Amino acid sequence: MKGFTAAFLIWTLISASGGGPPAWPTHTACKDSSLEVLYQSCDPSQDFGFSIDQCSQHLKSNINIRFGIILRADIKGLFLDASLLTRGESILNYSYPICEEDLPNFSFCGRRKGEQIYYAGPANNLGFDIPKGDYQVLLKLYNEKHSMVACVNATIICS
Ligand SMILES: *[C@@H]1O[C@H](CO)[C@@H](O)[C@H](O)[C@H]1NC(C)=O
Ligand SMILES: *[C@@H]1O[C@H](CO)[C@@H](O)[C@H](O)[C@H]1NC(C)=O
Ligand SMILES: *[C@@H]1O[C@H](CO)[C@@H](O)[C@H](O)[C@H]1NC(C)=O
Image 1: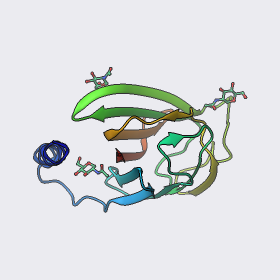
Image 2: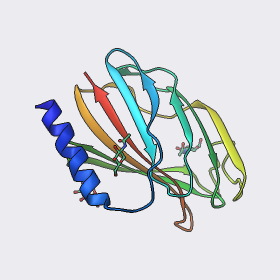
Image 3: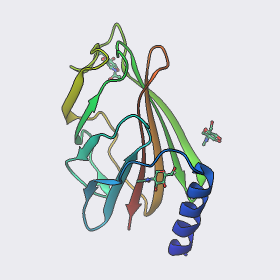
Image 4: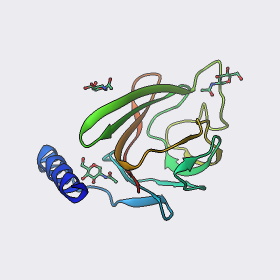
């Protein structure tokens, strides 16, 4: 059943994307015996590096992440839109402000277009157990003018 679902999903995604520019390679953000997180940039202009320090089905609060990216836009404001799907069905949409002009919570807030960011540190997250299953996650980062800063789609496999 799992194999069928995955095959169907891949087929759906390929059919939906049609031609278009070649896709970026798939990277592994983390992998252990019960959890695997794969991601791919969906920003046609760049790929980027991302990793998660602890890979566990029992997600701890304050996991450490690392990422590197070249900014395509100024980020006085930086906002995250996330959506979570399982077997093609939407289960959660989530929006979160990462940088706001009066609350520059991270050292990289306020950086300018063309600058490179490398962040290694905690991600403010909730700790919880990830239920078994395959999940698709789409993350979009954009600035206060709604210019895209990054786009990533990921697959989380929890077995
Ligand atoms: C990202 O999405 C593309 C198609 O939209 C899909 O082919 C690819 O498998 C996805 N990558 C990951 C890591 O989920
Ligand atoms: C999430 O947003 C998408 C697109 O706007 C929508 O189709 C979907 O129903 C939403 N899902 C939930 C769980 O609200
Ligand atoms: C930013 O910091 C303020 C004050 O410490 C806090 O109230 C707010 O929740 C933080 N926002 C984010 C996005 O972490």
